[in-house]
Image (cartoon, rainbow, N blue to C red; front, side, top):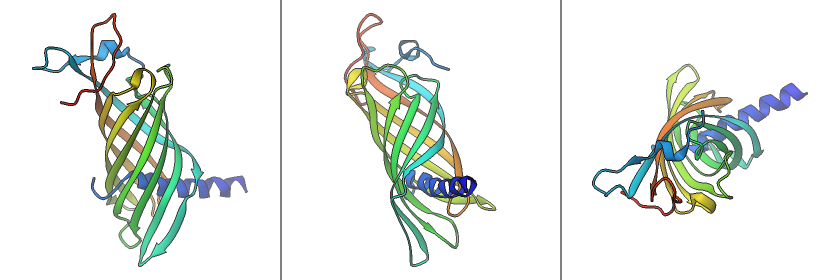
Length: 205
């Protein structure tokens, strides 16, 4: 029975991972050590790079699922996911709500979603809130590629006002999906006032 429940959970998770997409759309390192000054900005605007991997942990809410005109439609599926990053500001647990439409004949289609990423490191209560979107295409027998574009804003604590931009490429298995893994990269944009002062304030390039 537990095996069946897990299989069902994976099935839903797979579909959920798709919502993280839309139509086409982390060994810890000190944030200060990773800062790279943005050229032409007198060193005040800085970008902090990061790479990441991710995978689903559990489905928190199955949302609404239906088959409409040959498409699998999923709305507001809530999934808890693990984000491992080389940057402590992007390394933590993500809760995301996804929606997607998948053509049952081809297994392809758009997906989109919103997320809240809570870093493991102490950010004085700060979290990331953002959106993602992408389009799933077939690359093998029941194997799909889903590139996602992500945009996040820091809310609260030491993340307040910072901006995160990234890309994540998911390898998704099954139609509907049964599991997926992701590999990504991106950067965090901020004001940097020196090693002895706090990082604060978002500055877009």
